[in-house]
Amino acid sequence: MGTNNPICCPHGPPGDRLWVRETWADAGRGLIYAADQKAHPLRWRPPIHMPRWACRLVLEITGVRVQRVQEISEEDAKAEGASVMHEDDLGQTWTSRKRGFESLWDSIYAKRGFSWDSNPWVWVVEFKRVRRRRALELPL
Image 1: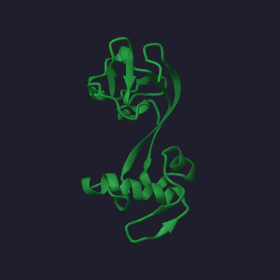
Image 2: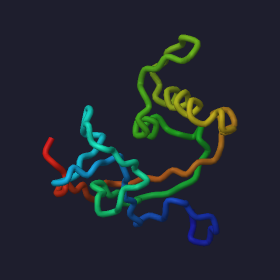
Image 3: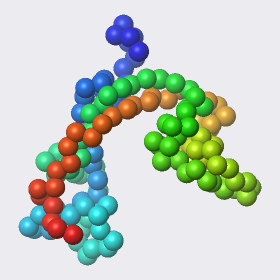
Image 4: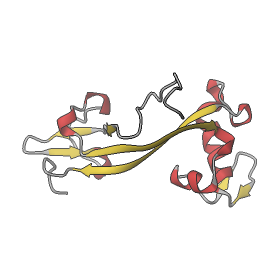
């Protein structure tokens, strides 16, 4: 997108940094993150209440573009975590990650009016990991 475009990505332009929030708990002598634990009796706090100082993952936006959802490539579908083998509600299977992404997309957005078939415009935000801090975490 050019600099004259009045529409800006809601996540920021390339170079901006995003801090990733996650479910966490203060164990008194350090932090514990739910993603690292199987089960723990602590009082978990939701990601929305995570202060910036507790963040352990920072991402830098490296690219932003707009495209129709059906334009996703096989490589981008893989980066989104789409499965290479998927079985849909009709018992059909396929080995295309793009088809897996289509099924995943519809499971999340179809009921909201943004089905795969409606081919909505989407933001494609590429990023790289800048930092992962572990200093405040308790050992596993």
